[in-house]
Length: 356
Image (cartoon, rainbow, N blue to C red; front, side, top):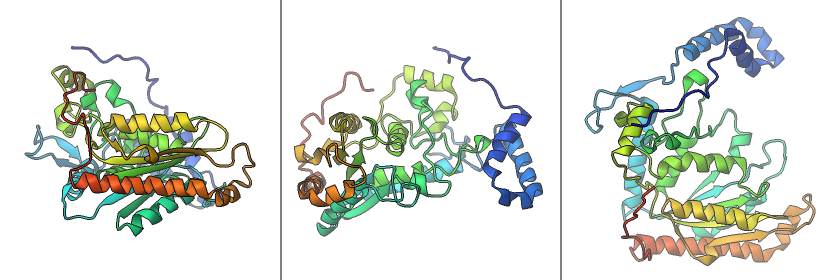
């Protein structure tokens, strides 16, 4: 069996390095009045760090898992149970149709830009169309990462590249209390994706790529494409067990397959086609179904014009506003067909010779 390769990690922080890093979060002079209390918290944090106390609370896995006596993270177990409930609602024909609208811009008027994003405005245009058609809409505004207190999407740690079964569905890497990697948003985001019949992503282009918040979410959704729903089979994060499990044969389950999607990608100078294609390829790979050519939109808003007047430019661009409405209309129709089992997926029953 292939052994895990070692030698990259530089080791744990020294006591002095840890103290310096910890106090960086308490540099504001208002904390001086409670120096003793902060010192006590630092001492506890040092103990949690040095003893690698990743999980705050655990629960026995129970008979629905391969190892019933395994101590599962309570955070993970609760998130997993919510996903199962959301999947049941999503598949229930009696429930209303639901579309997740993802606003992918990092900008909003609650922080230093001081102005809402054009992506948010386009998201609201799509929302109006969907709600008028009696679709339940769930708006995920990823810019809240930059304006909300202590909200995070922590980076993907690349467990899948060690072995696919090491990447758990949902992600079990967070929270990690030993490293103070807490308040992770992704469990709530996973639930939104699972509950949706359709997804529309509205995003600007940042340097030819998706914005930081959107890319963080994309990377953390890797567990939806092949992820392991039973962490007890890998003893939590044991790479040797995970490698052996994958080598024995892994099915790479696509946990979000079958939903439909639309895209709105906009920019001002360059990169819209590449960014839109990358998002389309990613969604296609996960098994989502595009809602047609008019549901995959890339447009420039104010090509080479002033940033300062970009909102006024959008005000005048009634064509792009109508094109965004068409994205929403196309996704609405695709959701209707999906739920009536009429949405055509010609390759649905073809077996993948290389299911990765």
